[in-house]
Length: 268
Image (cartoon, rainbow, N blue to C red; front, side, top):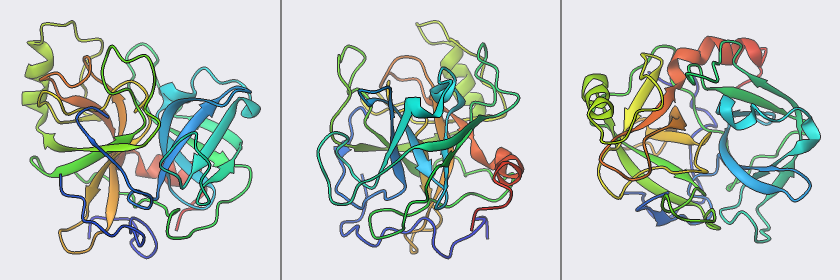
């Protein structure tokens, strides 16, 4: 078994339509991804990033999403709703108790682009709020696996606003060598170096994560019959949006010990 725990995590009791098919994505119904979280900054609660629920009190996101925040009162987390601004009976709103980015996060290279947020008050689990599973330490999602990215990011590079409704897009896992070559031969300059602590997905024109999807999960199914999902990657960086270059994600399985130690084994 390559999941850390499967008792309560990763399932979707309110999801009635199988997910078989952000940029080029489709609008998500409530309950489809009950572990998705939107991050909002400042007194105006302006949306800027995504995140994943790991437990009643812990949240996973990208280090670059919280890197500029210096106080807990600058951040608001919204959990359980697919529309980020519209009232929903399913939504739970929380503030952070603490924000912890990986101690080796490098803002210049985005190496170790991963962070945890501890909530000031626990969320309650229901059909619309559930934790996502973690992969086992060191597990590598096979190349070609069809996974999903989800979030409220812009639908194109030229879009001026983030999407109000959550969208999802299916993305196939890419091997490191072909991803490295695609980044190297892109007509656009590559902002960062691809490392072994990162993973790639997608690369077909019109299907990708985009600005605002950072911090959200790359979600993969544990097996085709269980409808149990784990977070394989944290959306980190890419070249443009929906080009023919894969998106790059922090490889979560390489940080399981760090997550466990940071949360003091508070996860299920």
